[in-house]
Image (cartoon, rainbow, N blue to C red; front, top):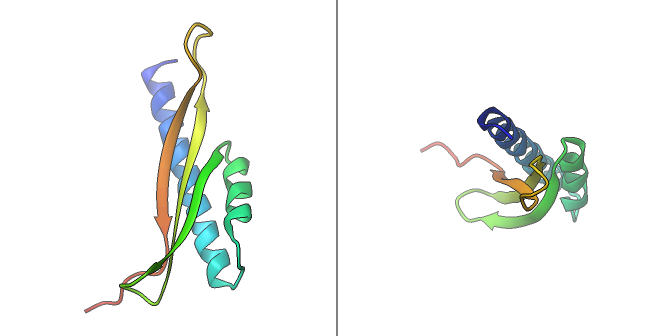
Amino acid sequence: MTIGGIRAARHQAQLAADMAALTAATRHTWGHPDPCPQARRTALRTGATLITCTLTPDPATPGTIAEVTVSIPLSAPRWLAPLAIPATARAGPAPPHP
């Protein structure tokens, strides 16, 4: 486990969270009643585990915000407890321009 390895895992976790949030938001926009299972599959394809997936109506826009949290396992020496790098992302419609 090096600083470079930790940094790479952090970037991988954020990428997985971004992709899972975009998947959930897109599926919801297309009318799927529960887009979180597809977000879970997207996270798994990028090596992450989906921890949470929530859809919240956004009062500032006519839409829903998808927020996900994922984690990526981090390789560590056996004498350390298992480590994971978490990341959270949100996706949804952009607010209207003033």
